[in-house]
Length: 159
Image (cartoon, rainbow, N blue to C red; front, side, top):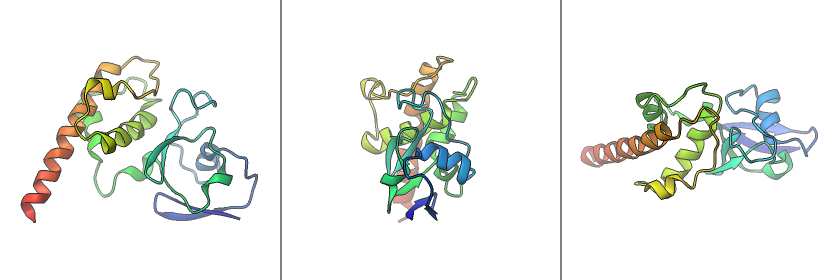
């Protein structure tokens, strides 16, 4: 029995331990925001957070998740939109939208590591967008950094 947490809820799985996390999320947990893109961890459509870090779920076997905390796009917002989700909407990033959940999850991880990212740091994201909305993705990441900075300043002022 493999036990792990998804979006704050305890889960356990006693099926095929080689099953990729992506298929557990979609087929067993009913969380379809995480998308299948390539199946070889190259495109990033399946990006989720495992213990707070971006991971490609299409090649990550459930066997490696014992005790881990998984966050999907459905679990990112806590009472209100995450700054990255808000920026995505403000900057009108999605065209078809298929890759956006993975893009957002990768951007959140990037902003944890680089709160005020340069273009070069943003360029380290390897998630693919077939519609080519990269200029809007870059704008949204910069806007999310500004929103997060503003939220942080607001919290400090309230303290």
